[in-house]
Amino acid sequence: MTALQVLVDIGIDREMLAGIVGVLVAAYLASRVVGSVLIAVAERSPRRRISIKMLVPIARFLIYGAAVFLILGPLLRLSTTQLLAASGLLGAALGFGLKDLFAGMIGGLVLITERPYQVGDKVSIDDDYGEVTDIGLRSTTLVTPDDSAVRVPNATLFTANVSNANDGRPEMMVVVELAVTAGADVDRASAIVEEAMVTSKYVYVDDDHPFAVLVEDETYYRTIRGKAYVADLRDEFAFASNVTERSMAAFASEGIETPEAPVHISEHR
View 1: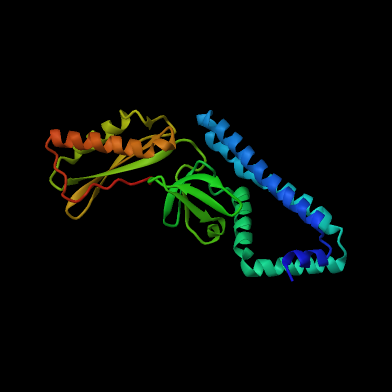
View 2: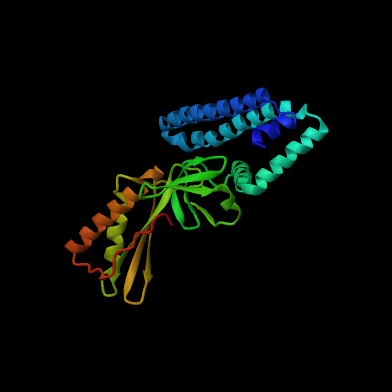
């Protein structure tokens, strides 16, 4: 007996089934159109980009919620016996593979209500780091620094460590780490890093967004850590690269030695 025949036997006829499919298709198309429009509007408003993009998953949940309401209307008119049979089919479907989909949807609802991150944020979820480009019903999409799209199931939110680098704001702190030998003039090296940061075209400095240069002693070298904000989080790596390149050039011209170990650039902490 086919699945279609089973549905017909419990009272879900072909016309009702076609209506359900039509509602789902319409909801899918509507969510894509609304999402595309909101993203286009967000890209035209840099300061409000993240706030506008956060409306995308909310709009999608509302659209699919309306679709579920429209679908449940005809189903609730079934008899008690038919509803029990339909519930049995749904339970079997969940047990045979839809439980992950269901868990992802619950995770998506938690994301909407608790908002540990938004579309446009730079986040770390376990070992994955990147910009949140989409929060769907089942998963969150991150675009990594290597321009790879990583889809993280929303259910991962219940067990993963989540770190948000900007927490919904367009600006974010970027940390650049450089190393000099133990005998190098650390005061001059710190001044060079500070100058490279505050004169960078990407830096954003005011009373609420200060910069700092810290020095840490390691076993065979010293680490100089420069911390400053960028006005647009998308300039994170451009800023780090710019500061590193100019600092290293100044180190070389002034005879400040660096250790043979590779220079480490911290992504966002």
